[in-house]
Image (tube, rainbow, N blue to C red):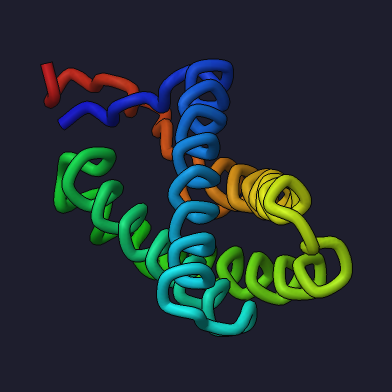
Length: 147
């Protein structure tokens, strides 16, 4: 069976940026709702936001992005590790940013945007070079017995 090639880097980067915008909107919305409607402190509201966003994006990846079980078999452990690392970094930096700069809605949105952008870059690099590495195999030379 032939190996499928990765999408070109520009396409993957474009989809990643588009996903990042959706992720920011989701993360910021959950943070705002958890703080204003559930009256949670920033630490709990942001934890709920980061965790919820991670779960939703995992489900999106499972049902939409990865269409074969082979992808999960080959990459699931690395994918989960990268996702958890990014969520932890997101939470720690984001919480510090919210405590120092998050006094207004605009500032809170900017903090979430900057943190999501930073961790998004980390995830993109991890995904590109470690989680889903190039698996192009050189074709075996044909011998007379394989003809």
